[in-house]
Image 1 (spheres, helix red, strand yellow):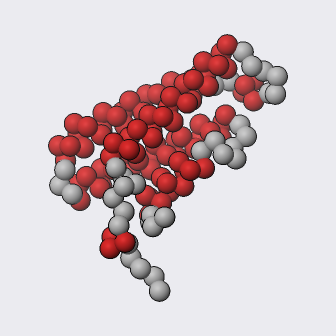
Image 2 (cartoon, rainbow, N blue to C red):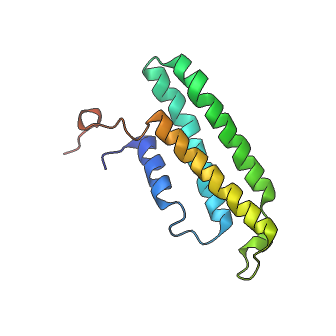
Amino acid sequence: MGYTGIAALIFIEMMEYGKKQETYEEMRRSQHKLYAFLRAHLPEVYNKESKYEDYNENIAPLLDEAAYKIEETRQLYKSQFEGLRSWTEEEAIFQVSLDGSFEHLCMIAAKSRILDKIKMDDMEMIG
């Protein structure tokens, strides 16, 4: 796809999320990784482009909300949810929260256009 560095990690984490993971615990970890990649990379991208105000006004608050949502989801998690016959109202609430956290992270990636900015001339060609 032409992505390198942390942009590649963001792309991979988003593409693999929910595909092969079998447990909610793994899905939560995957969300945290995606959040960490966005939190680390986006300030650097906006700094490089001298768009500090745009980052501070539009992206940083979304990342703060994402951190809150991820923590809220973490607190809802119970190991009993991993059982095959464990479906309860609590697990349904956790699942909605888990889905919402991932949707929020996807929205940040879309709003920041982090995966839209890669062009062939931006990449270091190895050959």
